[in-house]
Length: 113
Image (tube, rainbow, N blue to C red):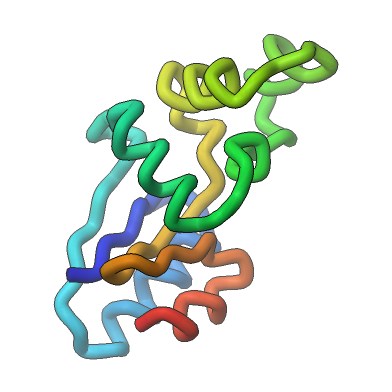
């Protein structure tokens, strides 16, 4: 099953959702700002993406700039920040079985569906 971690207010996320809708494949939408992501889920997503946790952070968000920028944070700290402040999670994230991609640009989603 394909899953998209989606923020309806984000243009790139909406474009990613359109790609999935046009694909004709079954998929699940997780509105991660409304439905909390667990630490285990976030760690799994990071592992599937093959990135460091810091690379999943939206560093231009006000909460990042005010509370975290310039601080020495380990992976656990970064994951904790994203769990407490899901706005910090880059979007959209699409997972298809054991593959995942951040849809920036949204066309990257085509690589895994």
